[in-house]
Image (cartoon, rainbow, N blue to C red; front, side, top):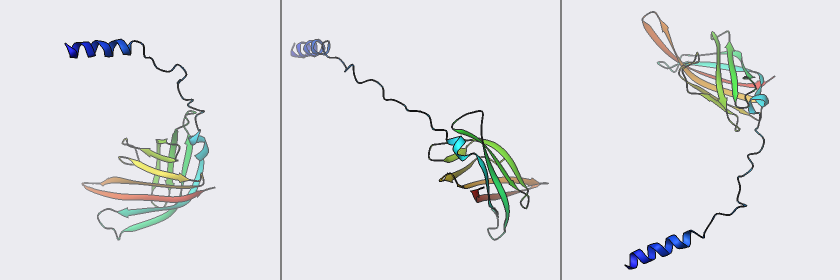
Amino acid sequence: MKKIFFGLLAMFAMTFVSCKDEAGNPDPGTPVNVAGAVEGTYTGTWTRTDAANADNVKSGTGTLTFTQYNDENYVVTVNAKCADLEVDITANANINPAFVFFNALPTDFGNSFSGRVTEEKDASISFAKTIRDGRKQYTYYYEFSGSKQ
């Protein structure tokens, strides 16, 4: 009987309790145009390392270009070029307010890629790509580091 009485008393007390009306939702603020801030061409050094032989390293000068995708604040089109390493790849990537860009979907870069833009003037990217040559398969690790022009 006591349990029922205390249960009814608790339910009766809760009917007169409510949430604050003035709590409201926080202001989300204006979205940051991260994609527009990093837009441009970054020139620097590309490095390709053979996954099977770490001593087999080649490098060359190339570019990494960011273009804002369809006025999206957090999506950029990434274009990587290096004639010395036969790199000419384009794909879309998400970019967050910390200026880290990434794509986890299969693209021409390989399975995924990620990178960072620091102080809106220096960029880096890394990814692995597997290339077929006849019946053989070679995996290479690509890295870029450069500055905005």
